[in-house]
Structures are given as C-alpha cells and as structure tokens.
Image (cartoon, rainbow, N blue to C red; front, side, top):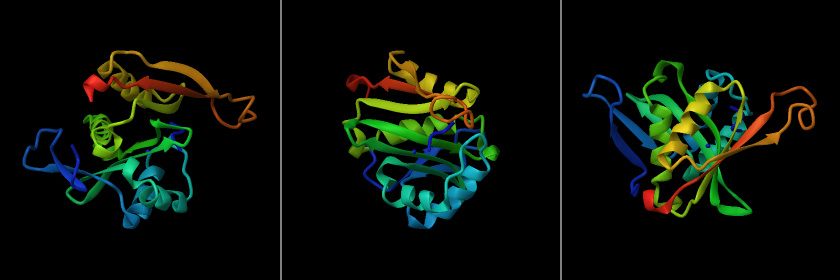
Length: 185
C-alpha cells in the first residue's frame, strides 16, 4: 500500500479482538513521542513505502487528529495515517495502514479505521480515499470491507500509473474512493 493515515477522550479502550478478553486494545491519537515508534512499525510492514522518520513525526503531530495508533500491553500494534484533503475537506485520505506482523489477522486495521471515522472531528467526512497497488491484497480486503459497510458504492480508478508517473520504478497506484452514507455514521 502506498498510503504515504463518539471519541472525546484521547484514548479509548476496546475489547480485545482475540481470545484473551482480559487484555484491552487502546486506540488513540498519536503524539510527538510516537514518531520513532511509528517509523519502526512501518519498516516492519512491507510493502509499505518507508518515509523519513521526520515524516512520521509530522504525522504524529500535525496530522494527529486524522491518524490513529493501536496499542496492546504497551506495544505499538498498528497505525493509520490520514489527512483531510485541502481542496475537499469532506474527504479523508488514508495514507498508510500499518499492522505489526504480530497482530495481523485479528481485524485490527478495520477496527482502527472504523474508530478513526467515529471521531467527533471527522463526523463531517463524506468520502474516504486511499491508493492501493494491485498486489496489496490486505489493503484491498480492508477497503472492500469498509466499502461493503457503506453500501458498496466505492469506485476504483488509476491514480498514478507505473509508466506515466513512476517511470517504471513503482507499481501503479489505484485510487479507491468510498462514499460514506451519513445515516451510517
């Protein structure tokens, strides 16, 4: 994935998504102190593009209101970075979705994204967008699940072409735009 992203309190506890119900997930906004940990997480998550750690510090500070971090027992389990599009403030662009290999297959990415969309400051969002390469099955699965939750109205178009834009150095990025029905928020 080349995603280069109700809640009044900064932290929320969520029931564990696996069998041990005594442990809780914490979903929260990232902070300045999380930048390096986010960078380390993303390096564990190919095929995500690794940006500079400075970029991750900016995500954790300037874009904290549109990002979510998941922790379990003090361990960084997942991170979603996003931002509101400057020319379309009703659209949330999801830049990266990272889930530590230790926590995959538990529905964590879906839980993080739905938690993010429930934030009071994002209730006005009418669309989410993301870009995904053809081979990133985990991302396709996540965003198709979100699309299904909102009525399967999403559209996929070519955003950045492998040859035209990347000069053959990166796979084509497909833009997945999903309308969010206000009645389901």
